[in-house]
Length: 103
Image 1 (tube, rainbow, N blue to C red):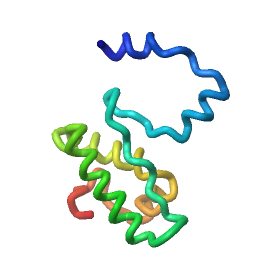
Image 2: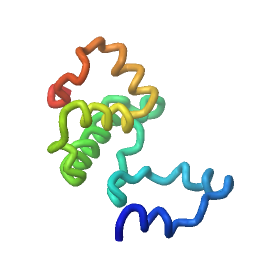
Image 3: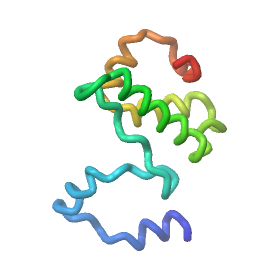
């Protein structure tokens, strides 16, 4: 089934169903869930990062993201990592689209 057909088959979201869906993982390419944002507020941040990075590495493999141009990979990374971690990422003052393998 094509993506357009999938979208057409889904009913329009009401405000109550939209709020219920906000806790569901966002899907990329129709079936692969994006990693949830990195939690910097609760628990051991180092352990949270370690787990999140494991999920990210797996996501890159199953979504074939590793085969994409680096700019696309970085854009997907900053989209997934969440706003708190994005603030940290931006504070690192790295050149644009740096090598993600260094982290």
